[in-house]
Image 1 (tube, rainbow, N blue to C red):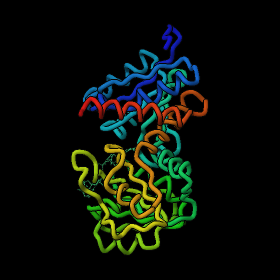
Image 2 (cartoon, protein in one colour; image 1 turned 90 degrees about the horizontal axis):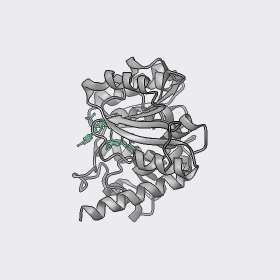
Image 3 (cartoon, rainbow, N blue to C red; image 1 turned 120 degrees about the vertical axis):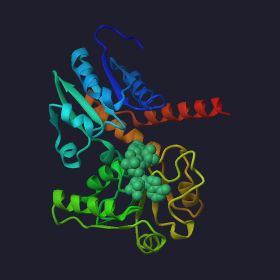
Length: 292
Ligand code: NAP
């Protein structure tokens, strides 16, 4: 990689970011396409965010990815938000356009593109989303206008109801969104005729990877099962879905596709999805070897 005085700098900010795959994914893509960009990671604590954004302006950092805990708190330091980021109230990508910081959110469209890329276009389908946290919010807002029916199931019912109401308020009454508790009775009922199941809870994530949010008996082979948890890559939910012959999509796909949209915002060039995924898989494999 040739870094010069003209190289554009992009970065991820968050806390923690030490194990972020974003530098691996983006640097692989920049190198593959011979683009004069470099991507680094900055650990920014919540209280340091204001200074960090002053730093972005002062140093002319060209692009940012924003991860926990800054996705909402960064908004007040930006100059502009694109329509989707405004609707959802969350930012995971920033473009420094001639000194103006513009915020975008690519999480929802990343999930949508991951589904389409895997051949499971959610257009006109019944989709069940588990969880009502930050990731679910971006996904549900993006899918609500495109699907036939969207069911949000969450452990804390109030959060699911608030999210569904909020989607209706913002997108209008034409969207078909319902909320219910994440309990077996609802899972059984809603999954029976569903086309797509998305796990947007943190259930199944390491070190709790022995858990699954859905009993295996409620899955069926006509269901596409998409788990946005990417650590481990194959969660128990995906393993059990595969066993019954259902199509599965892992969390790395969402990570790559949301990264690809950020990449395109910064460079204006189509992202090399396969190169990005290969680089991430190599890194995951290396890390696993180091840890065994
Ligand atoms: P969040 O805002 O903290 O939301 C967590 C969600 O998980 C909430 O709905 C919470 O329910 C639910 N939950 C947590 N523990 C649970 C349990 N034991 N049983 C049932 N539900 C439980 O987190 P987030 O940012 O949305 O992230 C959620 C997951 O998605 C994480 O694993 C994260 O790593 C992953 N993620 C992946 C990508 C990607 O690109 N692949 C992007 C973003 C996030 P309550 O409301 O009841 O607490």
